[in-house]
Image (cartoon, rainbow, N blue to C red; front, side):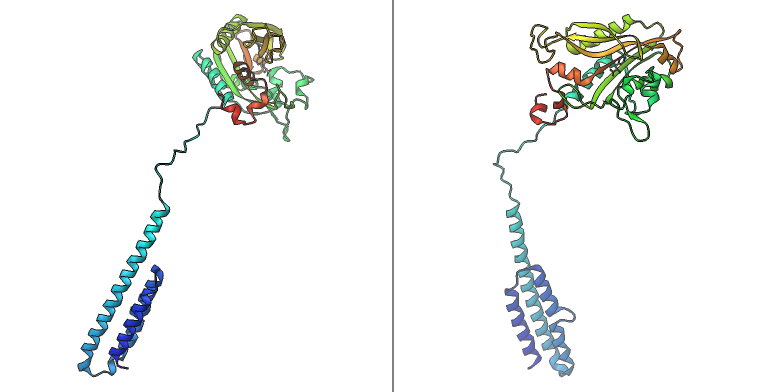
Amino acid sequence: MSLVAEIEALEVATLARVEGLSSDEALEHLRVEVLGRKGALTAILRGLKDVPAGDRPAIGERANAAKRAIEERIEAALAAARAVAESSRLASEVVDVTLPARGWPRGRRHPLLRTMEEAIDIFERMGFEVVESPEIEDDEHNFEALNFPDDHPARDMQDTFLLEDGRLLRTHCTPSQVHVMRARKPPLAVITPGPTYRRDDLDLTHAPMFHQIDCFLVDEQVSFADLKGFLTEFLTAFFGDVAVRFRASFFPFVEPGAEVDIGCALCRGKDAACRVCRGEGWLEILGAGMIHPNVLRAVGYDPEKVSGFAFGLGVERLAMLRHAIDDIRLFTENDLRFLRQF
Ligand code: PHE
């Protein structure tokens, strides 16, 4: 077969093969196989050296023509293949702008956090400063410096989560007083909000983790009247016009000590079956008192020169009273039907 015939046969066969191909890859592959440096056309043209010199230009021209024809056809097929791929991509990405919008679910602040923030906000307006304090404490800060006798029942393992290294999860926020007073000098007006831990079983009104805000003020000549004034101011700001009652009570770290009740906002003392106050008409919300001289001494203050008041309130309690919630477990169950109400 002459070289020209070989070239023509290759051209015809190649053009026919292009028709059957529709992928980029296969077409590129064919281009290399036929026109590449080690391709079929090059192989044919290697025969040129055996052809008389005068015939060579014509054969070369024929080869170039075949090359152009094949290249064009492959280019066209490639363009067609890309167009098909593009239109199927577009079809799969179609956006139906007439569909109804999906909407974004809106989050809410957790009712406990909101209660905490509202209370903190009121204290800050009254001039108190927020200080954070560790949740893991030692016996000295949680009990000893706070004037707990060695045999005080609160020290019992029944009440306190003990860690293996002898430290413990704080059972109240009051140890923060010890940290702050040891680090600084009066006058001090500080609140310390945060979680606290006790080995209570979870029921309607108890949880092994709950939150407190402790508040204390130390200066020269702070009196019980200051305590009553500040507390009443806070409770009125938080609950609105509410009755406040002080009852004598005992905490090792205050003297005198008191528990403070507010009038039940739900039944105002008129419903014997009230699910919030259980007919009592009053609800206990905090412990308070004048900081015990032993505590002042334990932090290096002179009880002859300075005095202070302290109180600690339960945040869950505040939130339950504010919103007439009768089960403390609701705060940690993450039931959206509950959380969405706030
Ligand atoms: N720490 C006490 C408690 O957890 C509350 C309290 C704080 C009482 C400050 C008096 C003074 O119950």
